[in-house]
Amino acid sequence: MNIPDIMKIKTAWDTFTANHPKFPMFLNAVRNKGITEDTILAVTITYPDGQVLDTNIKVTASDLELYETLKSLRD
Image (cartoon, rainbow, N blue to C red; front, side, top):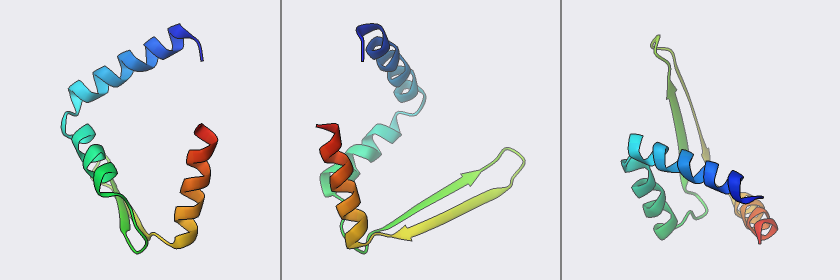
């Protein structure tokens, strides 16, 4: 990744966190506590027209293995 791309991402992240200041705090809290087996992850999307889509998963040991594998690819 080159410097202009990094700066573009940084600017976009700064704008995002200014628009949604509680979200980074939420992510930090999740990172600090961690996600363990049997944790339930839920996502709800509410569209402007009122339509709601939601789902959830219960984290399994294999999910955690996949997560650790993906993290190791980043290094």
